[in-house]
Length: 368
Length: 157
Image (cartoon, rainbow over all chains, first blue to last red; front, side):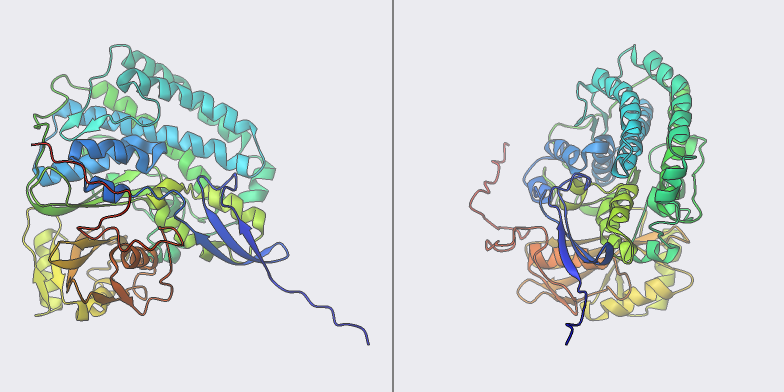
């Protein structure tokens, strides 16, 4: 009697340390050939206990830790933490300080999206765009370096304002960058957006429905690619974002292709904001008078800003002492990775890599 | 809705079972009984005037005297937001999962379970999460926790 042929599902470990996982992540996949039947993310490899460490440090000492919370957009992480502390301490930031924060925050958003625009095609097998985007990112890194001396972990935004004023050569250099940037964005689009291979890899793949956005608290560009019009800079304005004229790019299908285009268009809008902020930049103080041993009023606050990966929120409890009593920071990737298993079921392994990249997931933000 | 409108709407809609926590922040803050947690979450999510569809954050807090779980919710549609919390005794901290209302609560609750040692009832997957698989040094986010290589910094003046 002939033995009956049968197939069975196989469990495959993807990672830890898969090159395209944007940090150390492990995905336990149950696959039927190439088709993903189940996906279980295993996290915690980058857990540094930032929340516990913050309880043991003064507010000023916490800011460098927030740099490490999510190192692609350190400025925004500094900003979110300082915003929460300022709300508790009832501190008014001087106007020039707010403008510098917006300039740095938006330049950092461009830098982060440039990493995304370079790395996502790399995960789909196209190496070239990476070299182009990192050329432009280098110019932003130079701007940051001349301002605060750091290229990745800035420790620049402080409670009450910013650490240093910009040097005189910053504004011409920044204008020069903004002048060439639009043309460079068109180059990326020429390389990818109309490229038939890129379209075949990304269009209609990894669809996030608006319902999935609501259920899994997906935020930022990944939510807007699904047509959910939610941007904290517009809907719950913090700092001075209500003074600038900019648009919120929206997608329609919620697939990987839309998520990419939304981010490319967001870079244009960020460049617009930076240009306006440079034009309007007032003179004056950059930092409010905040004592070195800053003690906010007892209380609790949840404050949030629009980070390049989604909502960056900081829940802060103060007991009136010099150290935060409790700090819980929330980054967009935490929720995005949670939603990945619901998106990838039934797709191929190669699609998982592309979807993972298209959601711009970064692990330090998840593990903290 | 503004802070005053939200406060009035919720105290009227969830009569007698919600306590308002006064503060000077722009969003309202409520305290609910742990037994009413799921009903309150369901009410916030389903009420057409509230539509709190977005669970922004969920944080456990050890105040030293009791445990608290703080929920920050927002509406994708109506853009308003609020905070609410539940309070539990330290020696018997148990609360229900809100996963059936906001599926995003899954990982947040796992984290609260792992780092604070609070029990989450009806949660489908309470397993090791952020800490090492062979972790046996207790619940690190509790106040007064000491670990082998954890040295509190001296308080300089």
